[in-house]
Structures are given as structure tokens and as C-alpha cells.
Length: 196
Image (cartoon, rainbow, N blue to C red; front, side, top):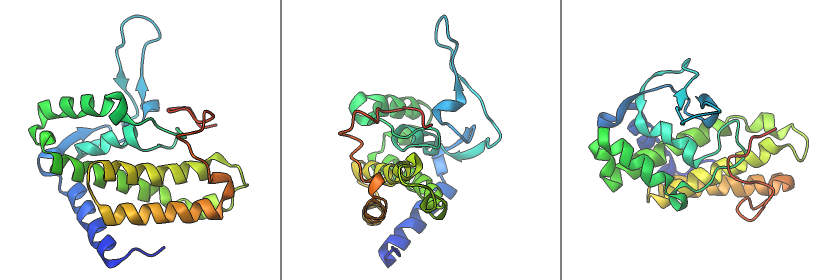
């Protein structure tokens, strides 16, 4: 599935956005996945970020990717726009970065961050192709590509990249019939369920 010239141009612009985030530059632990947050079992919630080996300054919206796109420890994620989590995150971010209120800038940054993550996960394609049918990592890759495309579409960002991601996901669904499942319709894949 080679990308078209427009897709390559859009991907380059997305990577430029992440490399030069302007006002969205923020310190991050570099791995905001849910399994890198520690909560106390009793008493008031007192969330603590852990796992700082990738810490540094990066585009603030790279930390939001885990709200929208499956990470390595999760098979599916919920839709944070329907639960209100997306708005809560955006408003909290806007307190420190007022540019987060700009729909275009926020959408482009979030779309770029989600697509970047999907590309990182897509690098595992050859490895996943050798796994046995039914291995959940295949379905997770399809879900990742589709979730990244859905997020960018929701924020009206990167339409050519979205189309390319969706085409790759469709090819993988045909190549791996075991990964041709509708996660939104399946009760067997609730959001934020740990992968085994």
C-alpha cells in the first residue's frame, strides 16, 4: 500500500508539526499509557506518573494519543469524545497552552500524533504476519490504524493519510480473517481491557 504523493506530503507536514510544536512544546514522561499511572487502592485518588525513561520535551498532544488509539497494553480504547474525556483533556491543556482552544491547531496536532503512533505500531507488520491466526496483536494493529484514522477524521485533519490508513486496515482485514471483527459491536472487546 504505497502512499500517494499527497499522502506523503501530508505525512511530512504532520511529522514537521510534531518536530516543531511551537506553543505545544511540553515536558512529558514520554509514555502516557494507562499502565504508567499508579493509583492508590484506598483513599482519595492520587494519580502518579511512573516510567520516565522516555521523558523529555515533546508535542503536548502526543500524551493524548492513548485516549484515542490502542497502546501496547490495551486491545481497544473507548471514544473519548462521547464520554466527555476528550473535552476534559482539551480544557485542562488549554489552561497551560491557550492555543489548544484553536480547533484547527488542536486537530492538526492530535491527528499528527495519532498517525505517528499508528506508523510506529505498523512497523511490527512483518512480525505480526508470522503469528498464528487469532493472535490478538493482529486485531490490535487493525484497531490502531482505524482508531488513528477515526480520530484525525473527527478533528478534520489529514484526510489523505486517513484514507491511506483505512486502506491498509482493509487489506489487513482481508489478509487476516481473524482480525476482521467489529470492535464497536463486540461485547468481547470492552474499552481499556488489558491484552493477554
